[in-house]
Image (cartoon, rainbow, N blue to C red; front, side, top):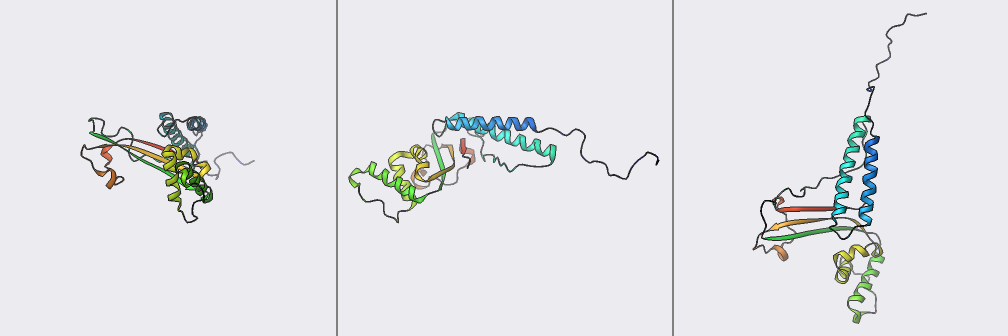
Length: 208
């Protein structure tokens, strides 16, 4: 029998006690469920419960990704972009003369026919005296969205989006401090915003 002793087998490079990412996974699952419940029960674009659930979900996703990498060297396809401007980063020390709300919402045009049909219904509701022929086939999606906004407003468009052939991607709302003599409302309403003037930012991302 050959004497016992060292072998030529390379040492296992893995540590004996690797961290277990299961706790981080459980926290992520809970954050996903709370985010879904907040979105289903949301009240308007600026519901603070949705924003709080979104922030918790982003933090839980980052923690799980870190825990998984530490344990296995693998990563997830989850992306959790951090807002360019965090709420409360600036402008809290002085009261601005005016407040501006900069709002953006993005949609995927899923069905042009549904969009045009919804726009025709909206135009008929707003201008009943024009009821009759359907919208011309060369009407652009932008013009159709205008008809929906004219009849239902910005919040109403969100409520009607699914039936109007639109899939919400997400939205962002910036609260910006302005000078008393700011005259950019109609001339340059969406020009580059000074980050120092952003008092608060609310982001919503809808899962596809």
